[in-house]
Length: 463
Ligand SMILES: Nc1ncnc2c1ncn2[C@@H]1O[C@H](COP(=O)(O)OP(=O)(O)OP(=O)(O)O)[C@@H](O)[C@H]1O
Ligand SMILES: [Mg+2]
Image (cartoon, rainbow, N blue to C red; front, top):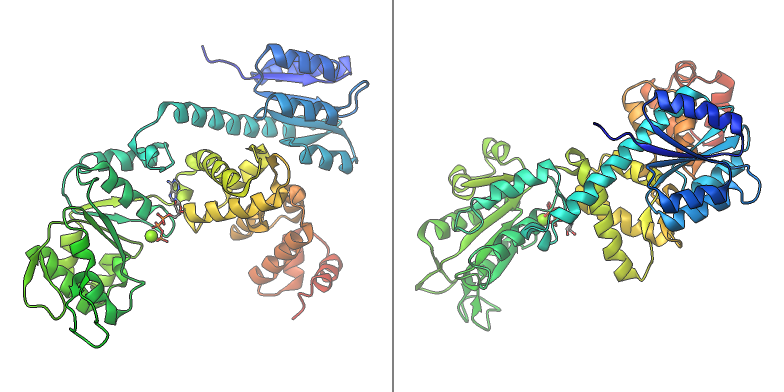
């Protein structure tokens, strides 16, 4: 039998509790009720709940105070707050204290049904991640590669076949997906782990220095070569060389690398002896090498040499299930580094992080969390600590779909503190999408023409 999600409703109105019991029961939830904050907290210490519906206006301890105490006992449970119509201030206060959402009384049951469903989805995701986190302690996690969802498991499985061999692996994936991290994990889990891992960033070294950097040079071989230098290939002898950003290599360098790989020996610049090198080659690129070959920028023969075993790292937006785990990992990392005590992320903030598109992938997530934690003095990261770009994703996606619904945008963005920024962005997008046709933009936005005029003036959008 499927376990029904368990909800605790705290409200001092008996009639309302009756009604909720009836309706929630029909929706397939298990219900428990309490008529004071104290009773609710007591129940929480005895039973486990997936979600709490909490009235703000109650005698003895009010809802906000109860919410704060709930947060102290269970950081993860989703709390939906019931407020009186028109009391925006209490709603804001509740969100700040870590509520997942709020609903005004009299309750719009359809709306509540949707909110409950979303909250439950996030909740079950969290649980799943916790479970996996406890289970999965494999070598990749030891290498600090976070992610145990299906996409990353596929990556680990395919790597397992070659990790302990000398097979040449090429890691492909968008920027910030963790290619370098994975290259290190391959080396440090294979039989060469005691030997050197040498990374070469092919994009960062000037063309004139690359040859000497890779293969070394003899003393006096060119002006400035005062000492003999051992190149990267030689340094990596019996270990691994990681050629990063290979899509950026010039054609002459490609030719030299190809020769070194084919012959397994190198010659220092200005030298006349060949030196045998035994290296495992790993490489990475975020470029589409097939296209580069067609354009004549990349040698096909080198491409075949390097791509014996290709591994594709998925972009973060295709493995969103790993986001909670990554967030927990980075929170921990930055708490230690910045001496903060941010213990958790509110459900709503997590929802924003889950839905944002992450063009810069894990690196972007890492940077954004670091910045957001600087804004957060308390123990819980809230939507207002996140940069506007992350919280406004829904508005951007609305605009992308060409159906801007201004009222909906307002509703969605009500948790975004810098509301003016969002409103300005919505107006700007509406103008862009309608080729600056103000009447059409007003219709699309669902507001009057004069109202739009006023807003455009306010935001200085008349150009
Ligand atoms: N799965 C992951 N778990 C934890 N941290 C990760 C993960 N993937 C990436 N990172 C972190 O994200 C940042 C970027 O990773 P990395 O440099 O490996 O990406 P990349 O694919 O090489 O990016 P680029 O193409 O821009 O060079 C690093 O700080 C890395 O530690
Ligand atoms: Mg990289």
